[in-house]
Image (cartoon, rainbow, N blue to C red; front, side, top):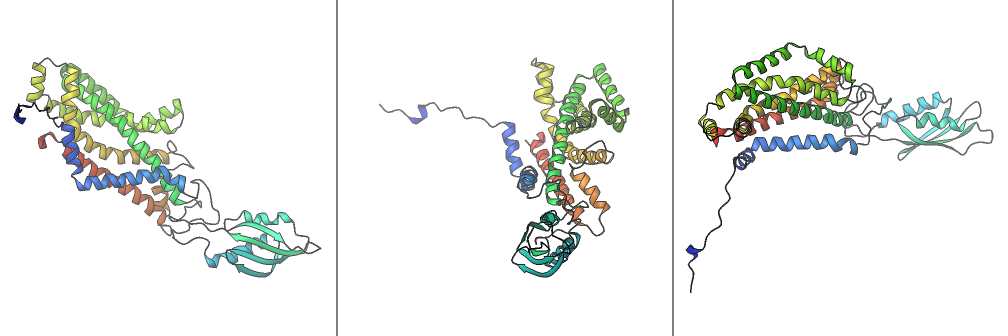
Length: 375
């Protein structure tokens, strides 16, 4: 007995959710995908870059203050001999002969008195030389051979006004700026979306009362609020994004409330009410998901705003303090040293600008992907 294939029951096909459609539309947006790659590369450099860099972010190179960005190693060939002679003069040594052998300097030196073996510390403390040693000393200890290796270092982004490597500081600043920007934005959006959606959906006296609370908080000066937090809780990194996020949610609440007032009149919301869905379920399943478009767009504007607020607070001494830094602080320092040291401004600006463009393109892609009218 044969069984027709048409008689065999087929397993029900799994339907596609709205989130699956939104993901596909997002990945179809080339600008958004490219921006996600750029933002991921910047985040990766900020996380692992300082670990791979040969220079600590707070190490000061006194002999390399404001040196330009270069792929060539420092010191340059014309810097070696003058620096060696200057150090020998500080050590009260007279150079009888000077010779460069590969990456080392070999010099016959003499002195009016016995040469102290600790004289080599003058060269080891320099940023240009290392592993200095005195050999072939004369019987009276007044002459000998001084050998020192040239300490080659690379500064691909140059150095700042204190002689610190700009590449490492740019990477470490990315950690601070991105962390503060993203965490403060997450705090602001979480509070603002929930507060605004609840206020707009409930309406009536509850809405008026909740909005009056927002108006009162608007009247409090932001700087005064931050100073109060610093006085009570001290200056620390966590306080930064809590203080900023606890204030920036006010705009988000107003935006979401305005969207909610329109959405709650839609047929699908009225149908949910007629079916007996609770207010919490309607807000969670219908109101908030349909406000994600404006929320995402505002988020892409809020992240750079938070980064700029952080740099402003750091300038006032309430934010990130030395030797830690951020992109805003680096750009501020670069602007003060623009003449003659343009690299101090260029590289942090490239990272910050690239991050802002990437966030904007990602925001546009998410807005189009989450727009309920395009479903």
